[in-house]
Image: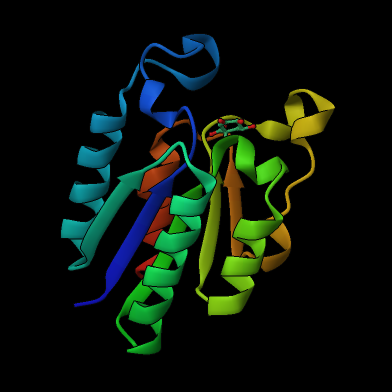
Length: 147
Ligand code: DQA
C-alpha cells in the first residue's frame, strides 16, 4: 500500500475561521476527513500534517523522500500556504528528494494579489492545482492514485 503525504503549511490550521469568503468554512479536520475518504477509495495510506514552520515542512518532505526511495510513496500533495511564494528551502527539498509533488491551493492564487502569482514550488511540481476549494484535496488524491 503506497502512502500519500498531504502537507499543509502556515495558517492552514485556521481554516474554517480564516477569511471564509476566500477559503470557505471547512476546517482542517474536515479536510483531513475528506483526504481519508479519498485514500480509502484508492487503497492508499494517508499521512496528513500541518505546520507553521518552514523547517518542519522541509523535514517532512525529506521523510516522504525516504518513503519514495523505498518505492512506497504515491505522492506529496502540498499546500505550502505563503511559503509557496517565498521558500527556496522547500523547493530544494522537493528537488533533492525528487518526490512526485502536487502543488495545491484552495483559492485561485492567480486571481488574487500579484505576490501570490509566483510559486517557487511549481518548477519542481508534477502537477499544480488551485481554485477548487477544499475539494481540490480529494481531486488531487484521485489523480495521484492513477500515477
Ligand atoms: C493558499 C494561497 C496562498 O497564497 C496563501 O498564502 C495561503 C493559502 C491557498 O490554499 O489558497 O496560505 O495556499
